[in-house]
Image (cartoon, rainbow, N blue to C red; front, side):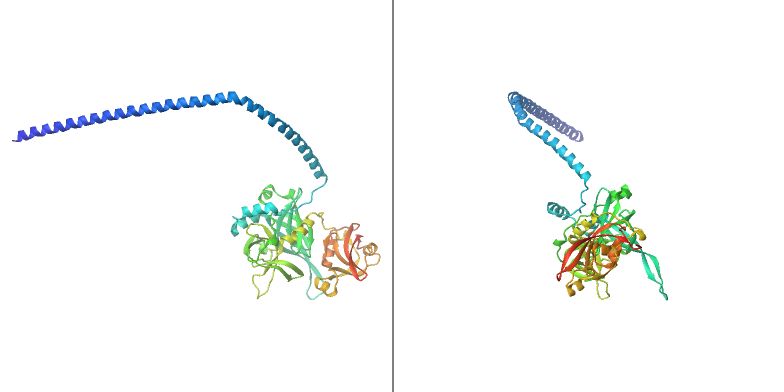
Length: 460
């Protein structure tokens, strides 16, 4: 029984193996047939592609032979005259440019401030619309802000005596780099930042410092321009600084966010932010200041002369004052940049002056008193320096000045105090001739006149 079962089992296994072998051979044959079929199709596609490419190339070749020569000739006929005109225009343009360059060398162009206007303003607004964070505004603006150190001499009366002594005083302020020419860097600041300076030191974003000179001041607006010689700046400093982008304060709106940057307390640059609280504010702190921007961005001692910026990084104000009172908080003020720019550009183009020795300083021979804005309204008189006395045989008398005249401008500068006039005389030598703008009463009305005065020496 066992042997029969074993035989049948072996027979069954043999049949299964045979069936598997036949199935494998059949599958193998089918694969070979498929490969032959795909190989034929690929070969046909390659042949077709080669034939099509040959036809296309041949057609292009024939087209070029027929039409290229004619089109090339047409191009030559059209382009050549234009090229000749262009060459002539280029030659003339170069000659005109050379002539203009020569003229520029002969006469120096006035320096202007980099204002945002017209198409440029639109481009800046579009590009600057992404500058919507205080940190981004600060990063862009800080290279154009400087710290200013003013060293001056203060006369102090001694206790228990009538004697006075001179002490060196140091104060801190800020400035805005607004322009440069071939020789100097020009910085806009407040008049009270540079007032009475014996020496001025400017520190830049890279902590490098350089001595500066007063280019000109306007005490009535509390604006001043100082200059730094470019050849005294390191190359690394010139690379790190930037000229500020000047905006338009006339378009400010109440509630608009602003950023203030300056040398607060003389510690170096710091940033505060707030909003435009009000416009056209008038304050009285050591003199009437009119039409100021009020902001709650913190402006502290040392911030004066620094920049108030909008959220596009444009300077729209010069930080100037803070209302200090135990009952007041967040009332700070800036001079609108649109008001300051015309005055600043006039100051920028003035000749640099150094203080002269006291025995060489110019002398006029007058005694005067200030006519303030309030006095002008009360007595219907122009603002300026009212002449109470003319010294006999003095330069003022020789120039034709009279008691009752009111000095408005000295060498183009607005004069608002007798001390300011005396300060300006320290920059002019005896013998120099200066134009004064005065108001003189004629027939009951004040008329504006210009008088030239040749300064003398006080000793004489």
